Length: 331
Ligand code: WQD
Image 1 (cartoon, helix red, strand yellow):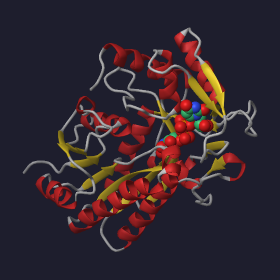
Image 2 (cartoon, rainbow, N blue to C red):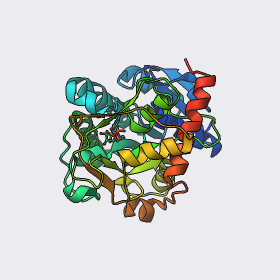
Image 3 (cartoon, rainbow, N blue to C red):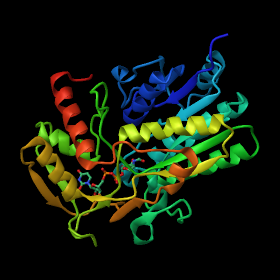
């Protein structure tokens, strides 16, 4: 009998593909469900790719049965804070309703383990800019609310089904696989490091600094930038934890310190050895000044041990990937 597979939704996207790569290296059997609206076939480095939507309940039910899935890792979602403010129903439709359909199929198929891609955005504007898992969850944008609502559904489904879950509340993910196999390839991404790298290689005319009047040391927004490979490793740690009988939990994933927009852009210029065309612009709706993790529990409970907690390493991997993508574009 073939080994049970892990279903990875959104596994052709930025974060999902880095987790899929590590699952493959660990010898796991993987099936990826991705609609390829933002993802790329080339990003899937192991297992099978099924093109479809996570909200397609009959398709998901068929995949769970066909691959004897006992674990689901759920990444498929829209992730732009700014877009979610302008178009909230797009986020509640895709992120929250999509997760509801997925959970219905999982409950009916007796899926045992569920790892969920949640976000620090569930905290909104934490007091003093730091959030731990006991911080109030008051999201200030529909992206954060859509993720929090999905966590609540997970909690309620797990209360009356054998399913146990780990919701990982990511802080700001950045970087690329250091070996250059995959990276951040999303077209039209709003994320700072991706925008800066695209400006560096001429794909964008400039980088905007959204707000320089925040109550921060240099006036620009501060975030806890987390290397994608460390974040991916946290998902494999969550898998081991759940397989070992671990109780359901929502855990922060971050390094516990932040960098400002200006510091990140200065690092991009330093790594690249060239200047960026930087434009000061007004604040962006839905942005808190500070958002930095208190992330002791992910270390204590999952045994997470970051290996890349270094802004230069993060930025260098992003810059290298952007140059590779320029030479060998993904379509
Ligand atoms: C970071 C900082 C901006 C772009 C993201 C994702 C969200 C979640 C957390 C996983 C802010 C500033 C940005 C630019 C800028 N990920 N900025 N110019 O909004 O913190 O959240 O990570 O759950 O999915 O949206 O990330 O990179 O957009 O912004 O000045 O062109 O950079 O104001 O201070 P954000 P971001």
